[in-house]
Amino acid sequence: MITINCFLILSALMLFIGVYGFLTRRNTLAILISIELMLNAADLNFAAFNRMLFPEGQEGYFFTLFSVAISAAETAIAIAVMINVYRNLKNNFVENLDKLKW
Amino acid sequence: MATTIIFFVLAAIILGCALLAVTTKHIMRAATYLLFVLFGTAGLYFLMGYTFLGSVQVMVYAGGVVVLYIFALMLTGRSDNQKEKSMSVAKKMAALIASLCGAAILLFVIISQKFAATVLTAPNEQLTSIQTLGQQIIASDKYGYLLPFEVVSVLLLACIVGGLIIARKR
Image (cartoon, rainbow over all chains, first blue to last red; front, side):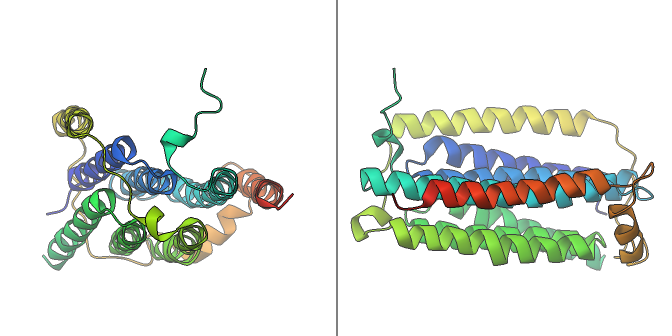
């Protein structure tokens, strides 16, 4: 008996696993992986709300499609920034990124 | 019944691989576990009958995003760089407590809500047919998504140009 609560609990757990990774990781690429987990949880929520509460409409479906496209774009730009950071600093750890720190 | 079993198997795969992805020391393994989480989510979309969404998830995430991650890891990874120094235990505990409190609050809110008790039935391709999707994504009337579709295409173009400018050699 899968109701909407099962999907919501699963995506809530996935979201907070991502938050934990975001808070504990030091490598910028690992932080990006955690962000990807959180985005994925949000996408799952959109699709689950669409399917379980309003199956006649397609709003959640389209929102998830566009969200996937935007997160791919975001990842590409973020990885370009990381590669540029690596070229300048020779590593990728957040504690070395302090040039803009006041 | 089969739907229930498949859901719980996929949920176990997703949660286990997500936990491993945020706790493993090797970044390359974290990217691989992320791939399994994304495959599990695609499986859930297929279970809901959203086959096009599931295949987009597999193509864009597994075929695009994870490959990008692995290339970036190979470009930036030295042997001393692959393993990260771990944080102090106090900071890790603080992060753990913060995320557990957040999860507890969110789970409390979800469980105390009275959602419609619709039960997930077997996947049905007719629920959202590919024909409806194709017509809606290029329609400009009330339920059409032509404008966001075009905006996403401009965003992707801007992303290509931005990525080239940021990552080029000077």
